Amino acid sequence: MNPYEILNKYNSYAVIGMNNDPDKYAHRIFKKLEEKGKTVYGVSPKYTEIDGHPIYSTLKDIPFDVEIAVFVVNPSIGIHLLEDVKQKGCTYVWLQPGTIHDELLEKAHALGLETVEACVLREYNRHTKVI
Image (cartoon, rainbow, N blue to C red; front, side, top):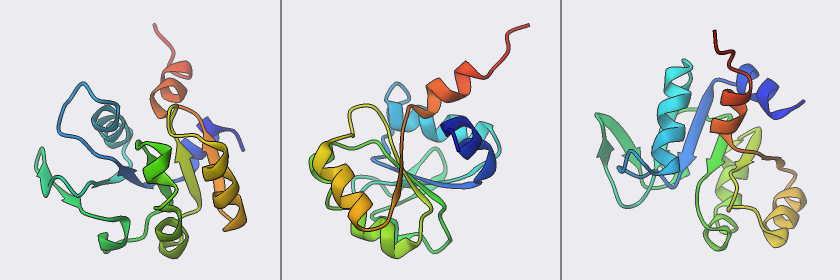
């Protein structure tokens, strides 16, 4: 399944590395997924709320099912979050550009996690027709 098909098939996302700056990618990805009708949870130990949405300290703190964990964090942080992704039962780890590293990929695959290496924003923009 290609990244765009995954975006269309799955409905619950956790944006890990959430930020309250509207110019930062995590914030933009959160808003884009929300705009597309997805259920989105922000994850960051730095915030408790952004734009009226609760922000969870860890993925494990989200009291709902999450299908896709979107990493918007440095790979040196992301590699330590993969166990949580596995325990949460996420279908995919979505790795934004800049979050990908060979060790992280190896560990994700060793844990049996599926990975997507693509930009959420770019995937949506590529498939949006301008009239």
